[in-house]
Image (cartoon, rainbow, N blue to C red; front, side, top):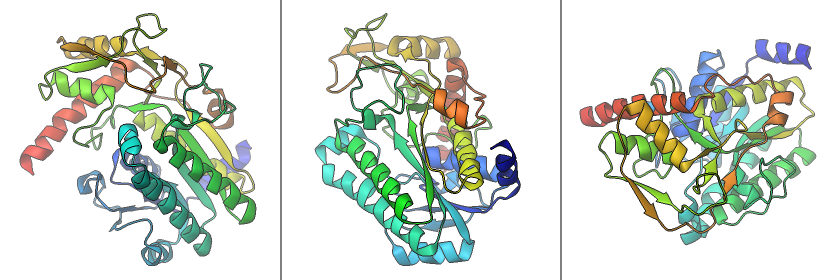
Length: 343
C-alpha cells in the first residue's frame, strides 16, 4: 500500500472540484493546488464566491446537472477525478423545502455521476456528512453505526452514497465518501474561509459576535446529558479536512479496485459553552450568551470515531486545537469584512 501511495503521489491527474468556490471546496482547491495537482472548478456561484478561487485555477460558472458543460470540462481538462462538494447544506431549510435538497443534492449528484461515467472518469470523492447517522445511540460514532437520517439533508447525502456504491459496482470507477462532523476554521494563510452570510455554524457565529457583527450567541438547550448541559460536537479544521481529501484521492489512484467510506473528525468533542469560552479566550472579550429552547433533532453528543481514516490514510492533522481553529476563523472574518468593504 505504501509503495502504491508513493506512486500515486508522483502521478497527479487533473481534478475537477464541484462547488470549488464554496467553503470546504475552496480549501480543497488550495490543498490540491499547493500539492501540485492540476485542478479546475465548476460552481454556479449561488452560494460560492469568485474570489475564493485562485486566479490561476480555471473556473467554469455553471451547474453540475449541465451534461454538455461537464462533457466539455472533462475533455478540456482531461479530468481523471472529481471532488464533489456542490450542494445545499442547511438542515432546517431541508425540512422546510425537501424537494430543493433532493434536487440539488441527489438528482444533481446523479447527473454528475452519470457524466463522469460517460467520460470515463475513474475516481470520485464525495462530500458526505455525519447527518446520515441521524441520532446515533452511540458516541463516538464509527462508520458501522446504523445510518438513520432524520432530515432530508441527511437522506439526500445517504442516497448519493448509495448511488456511488452501486455505480462503482457496475462501472470502472472507485470512490471515497467522507462523512464530515463539524467543520470549522479557515485557511491558515487567510486565502479563503467561510464566507456565507447568515451562516449557522457555531464557531463562525461566535466569531461574528466577537467582532460586533451579531449582538449575541444563542445557546439552544442547557439540559443535555453532557457535563455542562450543552450539546457536544467534534470540530475539525477545514484545512485538515481538505488534506484528507487529497490523501483519499491518492489512495483511490493507488488501489483502483477499492472504494472507501470514512468519518472525518478528531475524536474529541467540545460543548457549546466550551466553544464560547474559547472564543472569549482567543479574543480577550466576553460574548453575550442567550439561553433558548432546544432545537428539534439535536443529539446530546456527536463525536467521531476517527480510527478508520487514521489507519487507512497517512492523515496527520496539523490544526487539532480548538483555539487554533477559532483564531484562523477570526483572522478570516476580519479579512472578509475588508473584502466586502472594498467590493
